[in-house]
Each structure stands twice: as structure tokens, then as C-alpha cells.
Image 1 (cartoon, rainbow, N blue to C red):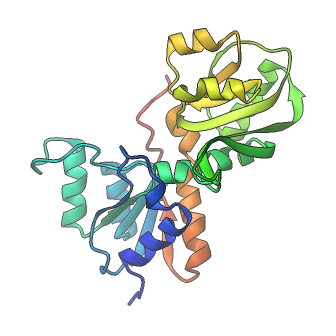
Image 2 (tube, rainbow, N blue to C red):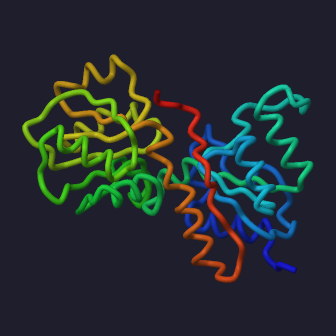
Length: 261
């Protein structure tokens, strides 16, 4: 019988991505389940969807650690009329705990933007929008190993990130300095410009924002899910490093709700 509980797993994730650092609108932390419940296996994922819960059941996992939370708005009933309600009901029925680490992971120096910077090989990195004492904050800015033409940069990013397409705007003679903010980073375009970056990798940038910023910086919108797909690996690696003899697995299916046709 495993001596690992929901609380132990939650505390490990919280130790690297403290819930106290999440934004006020966020809903990171333990969402479903009791801290004292025993955990036999953890499934790590980007999202918490019905498909993710079904895979957890198939794999014998009774806890899911994901990046995107549920329940941003208050629930007044659980009658299975929405996907969110069905996920919660199924998790409760099957005894599956749900935990999310969202903006606290985004802002960590070991979180999403830092891992994406590592994936594309950025060097001499610093936090793009530092908070508090400067130890955390959204985004990363750093230098490519060598300067690239815009088209070469687009191909390079697609290869390193593993995405099929990128929405691009703007032009530059060469791209050397790159800013990154995973997820919805459109509000930080001006910060990327101020950092003297030649290009800004992010997601969910609107048409007019891309058009307006095109004269100041190259914007590479790689997609929300694509920019945060590494979270299931981040959580998996963290748990593997802290609990050596413990069952855990990563979501095998793509949970991206956006399809490119």
C-alpha cells in the first residue's frame, strides 16, 4: 500500500510552484479530493478534460496534476450539463483527486517560459516582467545561439517546439534577442519591445495587436496549448525526482482543443 497521499503530491508541486504566487483571478491548488487520501498513481497533463480523466481511469491513476485548472467561476450545481461538471462528477465518482498549477508555474524560474526558452536554446536569460523581489515573473528574454533571418527563425521555432504552424507578424533583418511568454501573452507585447527583443514568442495575440506591433517587433504566435505543452513533463520530472519509487505517467493524448486543418 502506498504511503503517498494527495497532500504529499500537492506539497511537492507547491514547493517548486508555490500556490501563494498565483494571480488573484487564478484557481491553482487542490481542486477535488482530500489531502489524506492515498495516491497509487499520478497522471500529469496540460488540461483536465473528460478524456484526461478517462485516461487516468484506464491507467489506474487516482490523481491528476495539470496546468490549466477547472472552476474559474463558482459552481451552483453538479448535474452533468457541462464538460466541467462532468469532469468533476466523474473524478468524484472514481475517487480521482485533481490538482492544478497554473500562473504559479508560469511565473516560476523553473516554469513554462523558462522551459520553452531552454527548448529553443536561449542563452543569458532573464525574467521579462519580474515581480516582487525579482525572483519570479512572467516571461523570459534571452539570446539565440546565433542570429537568424525571420523565415529561418520560424522554421527553427517550429522544429524545436514541435508545432505545425506559427502566426507571424513584423519583419527584421536578423533575429538574435528573443522574448517569450507562454500562454496568453498579448498584454506583454510592449514589455517585449522594451526588452529590446527582435522577436516575441507567445500565444493568443489578436489581429490588431499583431498589426500594431509589426513595426516594432516580430511576433510569433505559436498557439496556447503548444506554448504550454511541456507542463506535463515539468510535473512528471518534479515528481520523479522527489519520489523515486512511485507510479506516475504523462497524458498520452493531445488535449489541445484547437485543431489545424
